[in-house]
Amino acid sequence: MAYETILVEIEEGIATITLNRPEVLNALNSQVFNELGEAAAQLTADQSVRAVIITGGEKVFAAGADIKQMASATAVEVSSSVRPSMIAFNRIENMPKPVIAAIAGYALGGGCELTLTADVRIAAENAQLGFPEIKLGILPGGGGTQRLPRLIGPGKAKELIFSGDFIPAEEALRIGLVNKVVPAGQLLAEARKMAGKFAARGAVAVQMAKSCINEGLQMDLDRGLQYEHKCFSLLFATEDQKEGMQAFVEKRKPNFKGK
Image (cartoon, rainbow, N blue to C red; front, side, top):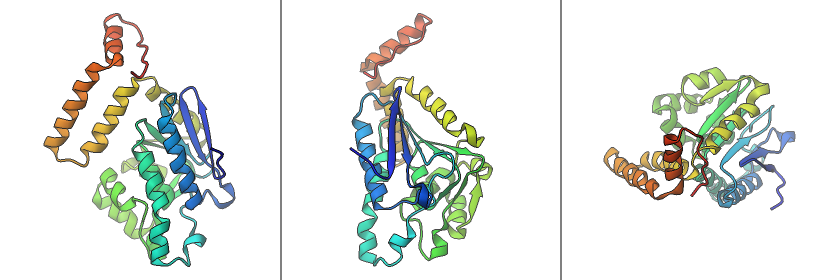
């Protein structure tokens, strides 16, 4: 599929999705969401892809939703227009492959919500993250009120959402909103390095580990432990498990095939 608002590149098993609306600071609109959702579906189906990076480039991640598109919308129109973002975000979050958000510059509102769908977030030192929706008389409507508290706890999430303030990369690191902060010039290289590390692991095990964490967060502890036990046991039916353990015994590097 030919995309107009994003770029998709695949190299050595790593797919990079780059938001590509620099003239409006990568503002998110329905077309962006539709294309993100389609890209997520295609990359999920592509067995050659082992890890995914989402970025806006080295200057800005995404400065939020396209307010001009939303300003005159009715409640019914907004309800309908939000669906593409929900579909896209859910597809990204549930991809059976590790997803890394590489964040430079502004990641605000819907842009910050997009980062929350990733498994890991790496921020450049110049990154600014926040949820300014409250200053417009609305609230985060792309999963921010649900994913953010699960990531950093309800108290900090409420502080960010109620205030609408932006926070710098180092503060985002301190509260657990991002995993790592690096110099701006090293952002994409660091994201690729981490993606390469994930891609080198057994793909089935990574997929099941991600499922255990994501699904387990929706369960009570007892059911989560049972689900983990089931996934752990199933991995012993895979070729990767046999290769991984045999390589350990033979003191060599494993050759995982994702089977």
